[in-house]
Image (cartoon, rainbow over all chains, first blue to last red; front, side):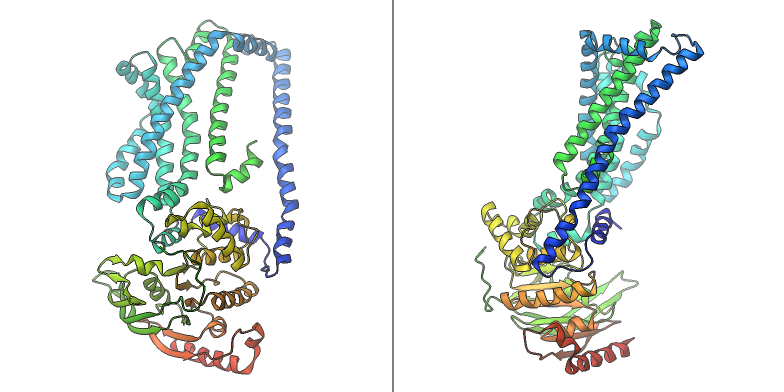
Length: 301
Length: 270
C-alpha cells in the first residue's frame, strides 16, 4: 500500500459517508469541517505554552541541584552563569565569525550532498541494475564509522574549510540518497497510467509526476541531512583548524571555562534549529499539498 | 489539436476489436487472459463490460486505453489502428479519456489543475485552462471546489474530478474501469445517475467495466458479459429501457428479470 493510497483512504473515511448530490449537500460538508479546523488551531498553539514551561521546569531543577549539592562550577555551572556566558558569547563579534564559518561549511557540504544524493538517488531508483551495482558501496559508506574518516580527510584536504565541507557532505549524504531512492520508487502506478493515457512526454512525466511525487521524500532526507551535516562540520572543527563553533568548543574546554562550554552548546543547538526550521519552511513552500505540511502545524510549531 | 468544446452527439467515434487476444506471464507458464475477441462498439453507445474477477474485463479495457498491448489482433479507434508494433497511435490516444477505479488525482495539483492536466500537456494557455476547468467542474457537479487540494474532497467528489479530467481534452470515447467500485452504495447510485446525465449531455462513446449487475443493467445500451479462464465474450445483451432512466427503474419487474437472468449466467460460470 502506497502512502498515497493510505492518505486517500484516511481522508475518505473522515469525509461524510453520504454523497452530496445537491449543492446544499456539498456546502454542508464544507461547513462541517470548520470546527475540525478550530480544533487543529488549538492543538497547534499548545507547544507554544508547553515548551517554555518545560524548559523553565528543567532550568529550575538544574538551579536547585547546583544550589543543594554544592557541585563545583567546573563540572556543572549554575544556569545563571551559563546565561551570563551565553549573553557574553552572542555579543562577541568573534562568535559570529566562528558561526559564519560553521554555517558556511554545513551549507556547502549540504549543497554537495543534495546535488549528488538526489542525482544518484534518481538514477538508482530508476535503473535496477545500477542499484545492485552501487548498493554495496552505498552501504559501505554508511557502515564505516564516518568519524574515523575525519583525520584522513584533514590529511587530504588540510586544516581549512574544504576538509570540513567534505566531512559535512559525507554526513549529510546518506539520508538524502536513501530517501530520494525511496521517493523515486514510490511512484503510484495509477498516476503513471494517467500519464500514459494522456500520451505525456518524458519531460512532462518528470515535471508533473516524478519530481513532485518524490519531493516529500527528498525533503525528509534533507531535513535529517542538514542536521547531520552540521554535526559533521563541528566534528571536523574539533580535530583541525582554528575557526568554527567546534573549534570554539574545544578551546573553551581546554581553558576549563565550563559555563562558556555550555553557552557554546546552546548556541550550536540554536544554529541546528535554524537549519531544521529552514528546511521546514522550504517544505511548506514546495509541498503545501502534502499531508505532512498540514499536520506539521500541530507537531512542529 | 482542436479544442472546441464540441459536445454534440456527432462528436463520437466507434471502436472495433478484431481477434484481440492477450497472454500474460512467461513462455513456460503463459496465462491466457483474453481469448480472441471480436466486438464492435458504435459511436455514442454506452457499453458495459460485466463479468466475475479474472474474466479479462479490465485487461480488455486497458488494451482499449492503450495501457497494455494486445498479444494478437487489432484495435481500431474510428478508422485508425491504436497499436502499430510497439507504438501507440497518438491521434487515437487523444480520442480516449480514461477513468480508473481510484481517482488517481495528483495530490500536488489543485482540483482545477488536475482537471486541466490534459490541456496543460497539450500546451493550452493558462487562461483557457482555467475557463475549461471551471466549465468541467460545473458539468460534473463540483463547482466551487476548483482551488481545493484533492485530499480535501470526499471519495465521490474526487471521482467526479477524475471524470472531469478525462473529459478535459474532449475525447470522443470514455473508458471507465470500475469507476464507482470504491464508493458506497448510495454514492454509487448518485454517480450512476450523474454519469447517465453527462453521457446524454456529451454524446460520448462510453465503455464501462463493472462487476455490479445492477450498475450494468442501469447504465448500458448493451451489456457484454465475459466469462473467465480464459476471458471471452459469453453473451451480448441489449438493454432497451427508455432514457433518462431513474433509480426507481431498478425496482421494476423488467429490470429485475434482466438482472436475474444475468445473475444466473454469471453463477453458471463459477
